[in-house]
Each structure stands twice: as C-alpha cells, then as structure tokens.
Length: 289
Image (cartoon, rainbow, N blue to C red; front, side):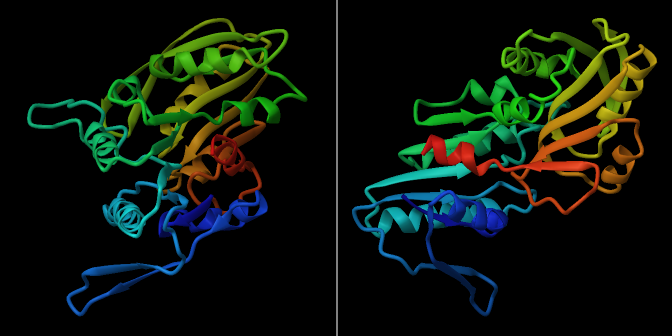
C-alpha cells in the first residue's frame, strides 16, 4: 500500500519508510485568493491507498485529509484507508453548557460519511465517540507500546487520573504478569484546563506507580495526580500518554515533578526533551494495514 501524508503527519515520513511503506507524492498550492489546490503525483488507479493525517486545531488539517481522500477516489483508487493518528476536537464529545454541541462526534461522522474503505483512529478520547463508530472504523491503542517499554520494570499499580480512563488502565494491567493493581483518582474540573484531584481510590503506599492517560495538554491534570499519589506514599511515579500536545509550558511543568520518566508517542511531533521518551506509533499502524 502507498500512503499519502498530509502536512500534519510529515514527521512520520521516515518511520513509514523504515517500515517498508511507500510514501506517495502529492503537491498542494494556493490560488491568488489563498484557495488551496491539490494534485497527486503518483498513479493510484486500481490501487489500495492510505491517506494519513491528524486533525489539528486548525481546520485546514481536516480539509487537507478530506481533499486527498477525494483525489484518491476520483483518480481511481480501488480501496482507501484513512489513518488519523491524532483526532482533534475529540474532547468536545458532549455539550457542557447550553448552546454547545458534540463537535468531536461531528468530526468522526464526517470522516465516516466520505466512505473510506477503512478508517483507523488511535486512542480516541471517549466512549461517546466510539458509540458512533461504523463497521469501517477501527481504533488502535498505544497500550502495547507502553507495556513493552515498562516490561523491564513493571508497575505495582496503574492509576487512571479520572474515571474516564479507568478501562484503559485495566487493559494495560493485563499485559503484565503478575498483574498490577488498578487505582483511580476522583477528579473535578471547575473550568476548562483546570483539574482538581480530590481523592485516590486504591493503595499506592510503597508502590511503583504508572499514571496513564490518553492526552497531555497543559499537564495540570497529571501534575495534580502526581502530587496526590506521592502524598499517598507512592515509591516512584512514571507517566504514560498517547497524545502529547504540551500546550504552553507543560513540558517544563511536568519535568519539574518527581517522576522517573514520561512516555509519549509520536502521533504529534515531539521535540527532544531529556525526561520525555518518545515511542513510535507507526509500527502499530503498519500492522493494522
């Protein structure tokens, strides 16, 4: 299969090639009024084609993905697979105030409505999104990558920073023998990007702890979680999350914590940081293809 990459995932080009996947050639250009144009430079007629692109805050990333998929179809691709390493807007999975809406669900439904042969997403944010999946849609998870990375020193306890990710914490625990305990933090959000960790449900005293989440954005959720588990007597703390946004000074905020390491995947571009270890998600994608 040949895979075309939108601008949002160009950082994965080398990884795809190392995995033996041919990266397709295309070009984009702008008209005088800044309208975008697109052109495939490789033949796709009768072929199986992948279109990879993350959905970023800038809606241009979504349009690029839609446009390249349409070009593949219009130019005769027999089968198309849309690959979305990072699904932005997923945290808007339900309205929290009158007048708001489920924008994340809208994005998933839009990707399904253009009728790719397959739609592959990675660690989506919530069950609200999974509930609108059609049979063409498949979700991959970075849990096998985390399990392998932690295999030399398995955790005693895996902690979910809130109830929403408890099921994933339980799934990660299954990879280890003996199986770690699973704990959960009772968290409230008084306003956007502000999290308060109120209570830990589980025992971490004297234990090696892994805090598991799907997204690190401002890092405030995990800062609160780390402080809570350390107050409860954890011997060591490691962090793992699939998608690293790291808004503002999140990297510095997290690197100041008493944590042994931070694991993140490269669904989004990640600059080098001495305390952050980056795991390559492309091997999971290639296996799914």
